[in-house]
Length: 429
Ligand code: IMP
Image 1 (tube, rainbow, N blue to C red):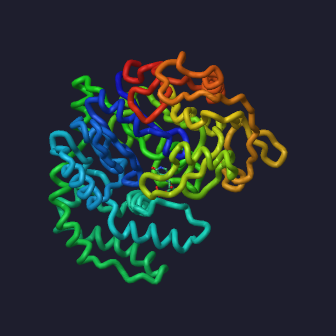
Image 2 (cartoon, helix red, strand yellow):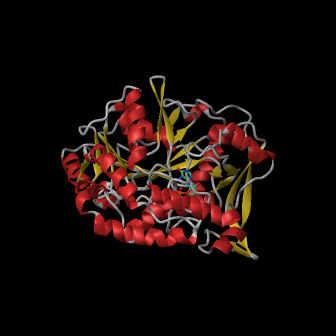
Image 3 (cartoon, protein in one colour):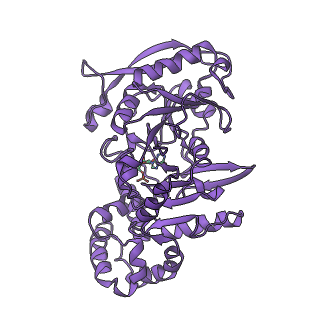
């Protein structure tokens, strides 16, 4: 079973990009299964820089790349991302790229609603990426979405459009906005339809064939488990299931096909947007982590909040997602600190907790219990074997592994592909 599912085990931005690129270069197919263009990563191939937010990572190197049904697809963004890559010499055809024909669309009305709600929420806002992700998933679950396959039947779309617009008109009225301009929306859909349809197909069928041929499939998760709509820090979450199980439901393959679950874990913690964050640091250590770790959002450019490693959260994420092994990233950001801390439990109103509670008020109130360890003054950047690491960095990694009850499969020590300590190859399970 040589397939790999990659997921983020924190609040996203764990450094999935480098690991996914390395795995994608060895995969025969790469599949996105949730989220949309709220994700973002930068690929460097042969010195050329490519920015992806919707397309799977295999696209740049010509590996079969698939957008599964679990994704929400903004067709106009898709077009501009493809055109940009084509301008950089990347070839994208129906041979190396496919979109699930049952994938729901993100429409301009979803982006509108995302923005209107965030503005109205003021300081209570979620801090979304503003891309219409939440409203598009709402329409999917509400059974009124326009899907990719509908683009081939625009002449009979009227009843569906009526249902969708009736819902949105009521919501828009609440924000003093005019009703949806249906004619304009239909005209935009007519214009974009041929572009999207050239790639549309039942991808579950294509994946079945790929799997039968014994190909290696990489399932590329976006965001992180703590942003999962069920298991995350609700309501400060994204609107999809970001856990590993979604690789199956969001692609159309069974759970016995998703293989090794690789959880990407950063050696400290960050989050972008609002919501609870027990180990957040607002002192100079937090600032240092942000500066050394270049903690700015790839999609929105926002500064990320930074804090110590929270072993309680990651242990929970690994359990919920059935993580087989983790890739620990950005250890080098901790270089040069006298002391490093790991959160090993919480105190909530005098009670000790070994898990993160579900209720928002409890989540906001838990106080971290720390274990302090000696730091290391030597650089870990670029290490490629355990022997290259200072003893205290090894102790730190081993302690992380122990506390999260999940083995380390690899340690990444710089953005360069080769700067990796490989303990267990996820594709050779
Ligand atoms: P949405 O996905 O745009 O609805 O945003 C909901 C929450 O998820 C916000 O806190 C965002 O900052 C966060 N989020 C969405 N995508 C990402 C990502 O790729 N990395 C990190 N945070 C993300």
